[in-house]
Image (cartoon, rainbow, N blue to C red; front, side, top):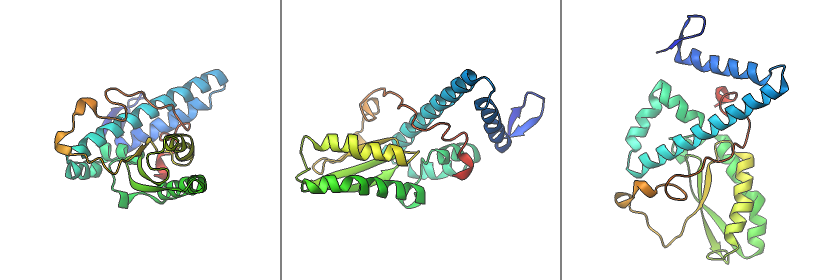
Length: 212
């Protein structure tokens, strides 16, 4: 599949274009002018963050409208499939890579002693598309301080350990979501338009895509 012409007139396939992007990014972040290199690195970080969050919200909407078969077919396509894979999107919990499993387990292990010392426990309900859903048990269930524990504890650990992490959600056992009544206008963690998360790691996808 051809993506177009390079600056020297060479026709590039999608794979070649992807490699060329990585090559150019590598050259620019190693520019002899440190100020230029830093600005390029920041630019790539923000592009990366926007892509991850935008694609992530799109995948969540598709799932909410029972589009699992559609996602499976998209994942098989060379261009959109590779983009989704680059951010760990559109895969089932069973398909999560070892990196993601270890990151979530390690983050839980780090925060569990604090939660257990207060007579509580954290249950991981689902991990998909960079979103980790948990349920609080014991004395933590309904406790006002549990949100702080999740935000400043588990969420912080996940950000450090898992490049594809997007957000943490606490699931209320009494709340059931009916996909047929979901309002796309309010879809997302805060309803309506949501801010793009601050980039967590430099050049997550542009330099690291080959290892995924």
